Amino acid sequence: MPISRARAAAFEILLKVAREAAYASELLHSTRLAKLSSADHGLATELVMGCLRWQSWLDRRIANASSQKLGRLDAEILVALRLGLYQLQFLSRIPARAAIFESVQLVKAARKTSAAPFVNAVLRKLVSNSASAAHPAPDSPAEALLAQIRDSRDAAALAENSAHPEWLVQRWVDRYGLDAARQICAHNQCTPHTSVHLYDDRVLADLAESHIQLAPGLLLSSARIVLSGDVTQTRAYRERLISIQDEASQLVALLVGDGQNFLDCCAAPGLKTALLANRNPHATVFACELHPHRARLLRALSLQPNIRVVAADARQLPFSTSFDRILADVPCSGTGTLARNPEIKWRLTPQDLHDLHVRQFAILQSALAHLSPGGRLVYSTCSLEPEENEALVKAALEGAGQFEVLNCRGELDRLRQLGELASRSPHSLLDGPFLRTIPGVHPCDGFFAAIIQRNS
Image (cartoon, rainbow, N blue to C red; front, top):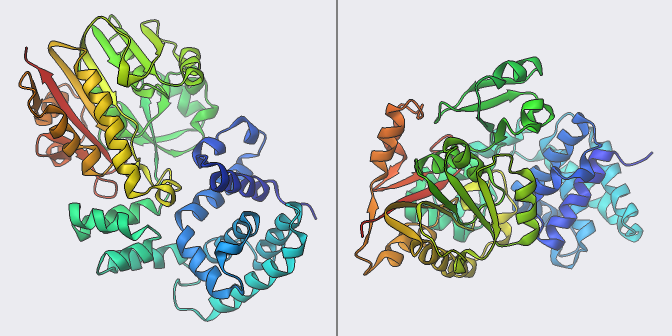
């Protein structure tokens, strides 16, 4: 019996994530998987994201059933065990015999035939153990685990129950409090909804004809939540009349406001760039991207005629002119997007936060040097960490009297008056003068934004 295409694809992706520091979401939407049926692609996505979200939880149980230390196992063996156990514990519709059989076959196909009996024995032992275990409940494993997350009494218990690194959870408890940390962790362990940005409301009829069911956005009137259907298969998506983009990400772009001369310092993949260009059709939007291949992709995808793509390092911007509107959406840790990118939590280290701070500081300083008098710059990240956010803004502006941080409240009120902001409590998105969304607390990814104005 051949290995199912969904499990083979999930196995391949998880190996790439483990070995090459690849990103699962990019691999799941690569052309290599385009030939999978909708059902197979859905199962592959569930397997990949589930294994990554619950990796430490899975590993603890595998370690308890294994005669060998996990650190000594080849990647192919450990990935096959995770895939098998995830199906056994979380996917009740998949028979145990099928989950075990295909994990064994995956190991054989990976030329690790000698390990096949070991994989079979470990998974069978786990089936036996789970039959008598109280947690999670056999009929609702995810719900039982989420209940444990909500009942966690401290950072250590919360990290263990929610399959997060303890050092990261402790930071969130210290910064946001235990209750918010619980909400963050619970959100990260669930499949987030898909949001889209509408560039033209007239596409709604086309989407309905394509059997796409939508709900209103929770933050923005130009956003919609996809309830069912695959928007990537629609004409509207192919013609860039809609984009898949989290509502907090859309909101950050809207904070940049109106202008004539725009700079997007770190533009790829170009979603915010496109939104800026669409909202300001008579302005020129320069989109900078460090990597030439990504700059070429940006050019190919940029349908708006007012976008100018430049391959350049944002730390050393190659412009002799200044800009009245700048977006510095800098590379960051991504800790506000762990529900979509769960592999990040297993790679990130405290040293990475320091290294990112240095890079982000250089980008912001470079961007500020190109801001016109009276102009505004929006600095943003999809991080929850203060050294990438408010601490960095404070450090960058220290002693720079010509710059000031504006309160985002004013811009949110303006968007509310214009009918752009759908949220009934926009001020809950504020942390002092800054925009801050917290996953689980707010219905979106975690984003930070500061509006900086040059007064002279």
